[in-house]
Image 1 (cartoon, helix red, strand yellow):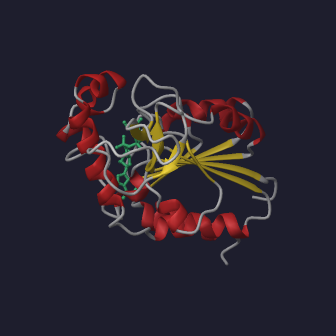
Image 2: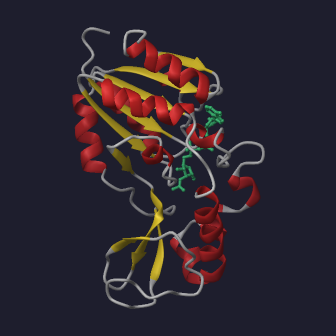
Length: 234
Ligand code: OAD
């Protein structure tokens, strides 16, 4: 542990699963209930905006009913107490890391609680529905869309993420299936540059073989245990 100073953590839907937020893949996952092509692409939004807006309105309302779990709060504690640098990159569009106490969270797939105006290009905090085409608080145009990265769109803040990966001594992936790039490739980037790599997941993921170590179990158990270890059993 002594030589580890810079940590990059990547989280996915598995970290919020025990808060009651559906994951995407696997039995009962969101992509089993809805086709990606119907609700999560720019083409879907152009073809049937009501369907897409209703889908995200339901998801936006649902996450506001959920609470952070022990994995979220353990990661916040690590950020507060870790003496080196720590960057938390999440693919999740919920705000449970922030509500769990994390301060520095980079949402590479956007955020449910933001709306993006396609007229003025400004993002505003948004907690209500979008289906009735409310006016943008900045320019008043009725052109707000969910600020969520759809398939075929570029994830956010990739420059910052790759810069942090270049400096990382330890890369940790938590609760993600390793099915969606570029996030699924971060382990290879970090490893090529000499970082140690650790996966914490309920089961082996598509990318497990890339990691030096995989620890399997529910996030609310394996994440607090790992954080305790990092902070010297404190
Ligand atoms: P997935 O649904 O693909 O994978 C969730 C992972 O979490 C799986 O490997 C599960 O085994 C694991 N898991 C489930 N419950 C868990 C628990 N209690 N503790 C720990 N692990 C658990 O979700 P992501 O990998 O986050 O993108 O999906 C990546 C991206 O695909 C999402 O950000 C989204 C989706 O399409 C966009 O919408 C752009």
